[in-house]
Image (cartoon, rainbow, N blue to C red; front, top):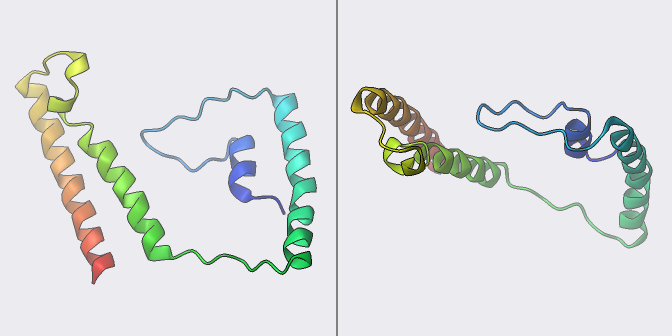
Length: 118
């Protein structure tokens, strides 16, 4: 089985992210060729690992979740009205609700982070 993440991207099954849209810059025919090549690659990588005695690497779930949270935190911080200077001055009537929503989400991220550190 090929790496699921790549197949998900090729098949447009990427996980929904509210602030990211994957642009399909690879035509359907090319995606089909890539998909087929990925299916051929998988058994070769498994065979290679067995032949050369390579062990599967271990990935720490806590560390992975913390890294994902860090990316979310950065994205939210960059959404603050004072950081969106390229869009011009944002009126307080629009900025205040954005700040409130961001603070609520950042507070929840902090709760999650604290849980992971416990």
